[in-house]
Length: 199
Length: 229
Image 1 (cartoon, each protein chain N blue to C red):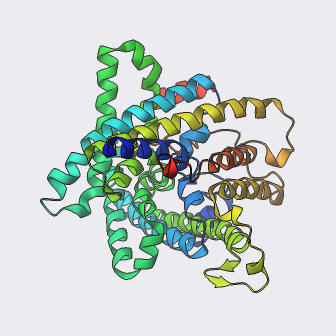
Image 2: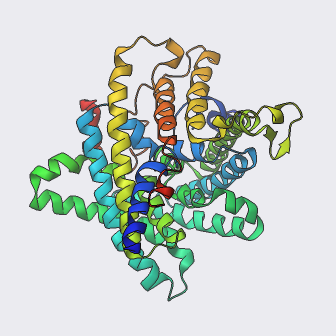
Image 3: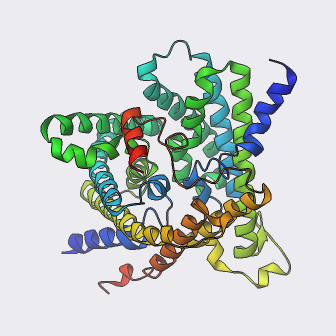
């Protein structure tokens, strides 16, 4: 039961409190770039979640079964980025071959994720936080869902921005960032809730 | 290469093509490490070091690296230099290492570095690539420091950890939190537009050419996405 509670806390806190986009600022580029339309935002969010989960499932064993026993911890960065880049390529090839319809939905977003800092960030953070395998997977799932959540919310806000009259200097990214600031402010309201959820 | 053009390569990165405020690259570290001036300055210098080294190295190897395998090669070179810089920071500046945390690792996937490798270093000689790296790195450092100055002075009432007499009594903590970072960044971009009187191009979205992932994505999907947008 205790483990279950811990997992729930990890999940909720990575979705709401430590949202990767809005409070840790990882994966800002796709957040600003692909959030114009709802379907694109959803596709990107799902693709990121899937890649995060697979990447964690592969990098965690690499860290604890290969790098740590061989005392190669300093290779973490190079090893992880190479593994993630290769994984995304393989995933793309597999999807293309076996599920063309899924590839059509998610495939276009996959190359964009290769160097997404949220994916590398989540794998490294799981190691830094000292999570075990199950906790790491839950934390990655939470981060992915949090990313998806932020993307979907923000795409709704952006369609409103496009229809408004905005002073010239603020057009484009300036007003988008300010809008993101408001969403982030809303997310700050979740602070402190999750830690006390079972208290 | 004559003197004037190498100077213009250097200045290009600082002003005309400032990576943070004009090209809008490297947004993640820009927002995350600018809560304190010290952290922002350190982040800027770390990125500068990686940028110069990787630019020089990639420029040296530009005739050897095969065209189709270039992105993985660049990533390995960059990740290698990031590891070196990370070890140096950890050994000699432990306080900075603590502040930057995971963002030091994430220099590997910083769009600016991969972008410059792809856009400049792989088609220019070594000296020009080094200058381009210095210019871009300085531009990044300056923009980060400017943003951190606004956020630290207003949010924590101090500058680089030194309390400012009047400001420390009126801290607006909002600015050191996440939303404050996004707000200040948005306002700075608008300010740059006003200062340059619109000479700096307004980025309405991430197009293919400025797209941080343009370097890594296969061109056809990128163009397809560009057409959709």
